[in-house]
Image (tube, one colour):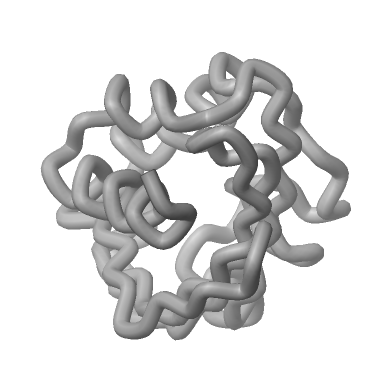
Length: 133
């Protein structure tokens, strides 16, 4: 599978709510970095492995958001990297605040598996919607 196809698979599975399929596309030692200042991981330090990403991110989204989506608008082939532009949308249940934020994701891909993830996003908007996350 081509790297862009792997990325499309991940976003399509995420859109269906199929987190098991998303996690299956990750390398066992994936390095995942949220943007510095993101309430989910303010210091930007990495999480490692699908289980940690699931526990610290996907389960929190499932419990704390309504209608969350990460919708790609453009996917760029950059060799061993895939750059994805898109938007996060959804409602943060605890605050009742809606999010509609542009994002950029940089994925490193090898052997049809996502090896690493770096998020860039409007962290001020996330902080306003998710205080104390």
